[in-house]
Amino acid sequence: MTITNRLRFLPIILVAVAALAGCATPVATRDNTELPFDQAAAVATDNLVKQTQNLPAFLAKIAKRAVVVDPMLDGSSGQQTAATRLLEQKVVDRMKNNYAVFDMLPFDTSSLTKAQYLLTGTMTRDQSSKAGVYQLNLALTDIKTGNVVAQSTARARDDGLDTSPTPYYRDSPILVRDAVVDGYIRTCETAPGKPADAAYFQRVSTATMISDATAAYDTERYSDALGKYQNALATPAGEQIRVFNGIYLSNWKLGKVAEAEKAFAKVVEFGIANKSLGVKFLFNPGSTVFWSDAKVSGPYDLWLRQIARQAASSKVCMDVVGHTSRTGAEPFNDKLSLNRAAYIKQRLDTESKELVSRTKPQGMGFRQNIVGTGSDDVRDALDRRVEFKIVDCP
Image (cartoon, rainbow, N blue to C red; front, side):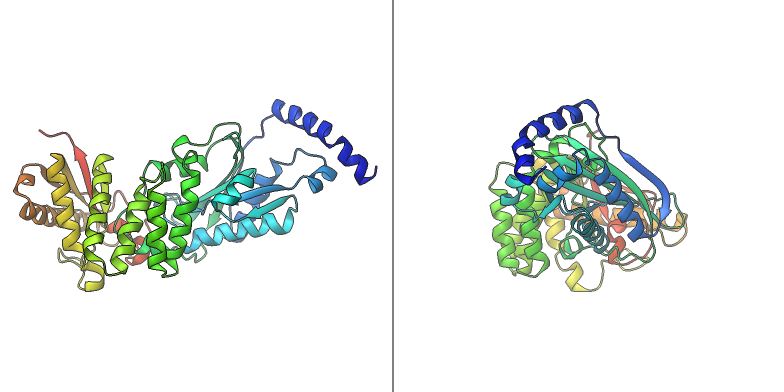
């Protein structure tokens, strides 16, 4: 059959294929074998693609399917890291080089209107594995229907992966997981035939703007980043913790201290409204003294001032919860985390007397680690956070 004749029958074939596809939903693929990272990424990608191969081979060459990739995340922290970027690159390269049916487009507003599929992915450290293993989750969502059409899982060994956060997340004062980021993570675990998480999927257009702004920040184009974050904020779905945080970070890098403080106030207000705010107050090892490097601890007075003001004006009660990394004995870390929480409470009480009876310190040691590497550096900074959890007042 000539190409002309094939094209003549293309609409009929598409209808028939669509009908057949509607009768059989692909089944998610799970591979529990612990593999080297590159191999695990390849297995996860191949298994994802196999679930989409419903069209005849000759038709697949004609009907290219455009895909956009929302930057992949660490499933525990919600951060982008060097390792999540590596995973994304491995998956994209394999889809481009091994499967000609896919046209990989940049993640921007224009491409979103052209693409058929949205690709998302996470890698999550298995805290129960002493050997260091990550679970990789990939999902393809049909942009028109909002339904996940393919999902695959593989397990990758941590063979020296670089899990350092990218600049935006490294510099972030807070844990940026909110309903939108949680929705992204849930979408990556959603079975085919089920809808992508609404909190995430309904905000994908704004996510393209956030991604663009974050790329500008990561390459030290702070003025550009600030404008892009402000543009994202102006959209109907713009009120997200990643946006408020980006405005704060960009202003701080530009030396606009007053504007940065106003932006951080919005970060705190958003966290209180969502009943939890995790802040990366870093201390000198084994002590309750803030990190000695002013480049790190310089904005801490600003943070404490705004946390106190927003908590007081909101009339909320809070548990101030200290956390430590996994290094050292459990009893020592329990005491250290409690002492650090008590120090933060004392600082808040100094800022606002209203908070004396409204806050209570707690120490969790390393029992609620997010990263869990015990590296005591930028990679596990989130494990040494102080959380402010909104609770019922007595």
